[in-house]
Amino acid sequence: MTSDKKWMIYGANGYTGQLVVKEAISRGLKPVLAGRSTEVVAIASKNGLKSKVFSLSSIDKVRTQIEGFDVIANCAGPFSATAKTMIQACIQSKVHYIDITGEISVYDYANQQDNEALSAGVVLCPGVGSDVIPTDCLALSLKEKCPDATHLTMAWATKGSKPSKGTAKTAVEGLAHGGKIRENGIIKKVPLAHKERQIDFGYGPTNTVTIPWGDIFTAYHSTGIPNIEFYFARSKKSVKKMRKQRLFVGLIKINWVLNFIKKRIDKIWNPNNADERANSKSYFWGEVKNKKGDTVVGRFTTSDGYDLTAWGTVEVAHHLLQDHNHKGYYTPSILIGKKLMDNMPGYSGIKFDIS
Image (cartoon, rainbow, N blue to C red):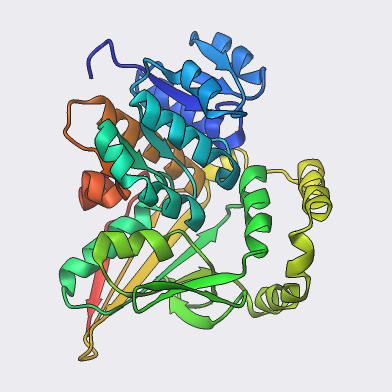
């Protein structure tokens, strides 16, 4: 990386943003820290870094703040509210854009800006954290084992980990949109907690339930497989609660109800500390099938999802700060290749089962 390259972490004062800052510093990198809150000034000063404070109130205002930068890492969620403005500002300022979203709507929007990004010569690569680097690389690896696959199923389980406040708020917003799967190449809306399935992540059968994860969008672009479902480990009791929530989906769309829930999260939510993250683990599983019924299953483990997100953000930012010819919309595995997963923190390597 040449010394004249500049990058920015926006949302550097958030839970995940601070982990990204720590990871960047550990690699000897010096990003500019930015966000909507003046908290970023203190964080930057403590670490000998420069800072900027600005909101995303308009594309023009953001553009004046990011001109001259090479990469923006957006860590400020919910990304359904922040990504569009930042993406447009990045395109107009000819700055590469990455973020840590897991929201399907953001991937869809970034993909829709592919032509504009190509013209501007910039990369748009949302989802460079635990959503979706591990599963995106796993999907591509499974596709290579079964090139004629027609169905892809993926799943994630965690032990000892819990979401940050920002992730919890994003999850609540997502409830209003129900579930999603991909069927014959088209994203299809389904009820919340649409299906359950027993999956062996490597420690015995575990109950899982479908969720509208980002891979419903990204895995199709990475592999071309037309039928995709994503599952997350949940007890049968928890799934019953999720299905009861279908009755209240309409209420979550009301602003004051949503804001009330978010305020409650701010008051009561305590994310994992460093020791808890060090003792937590993520389990990833994927399965592809072709028309003949041939099946390939792959599974692996990594460290805590937040540590993985911090690593992934800095890893992809560092890649884009090098000399390259990439431009347009990318998924992480297409941008860097499935080799990206080889250096994930705590990565166990993939174990394949072919039948």
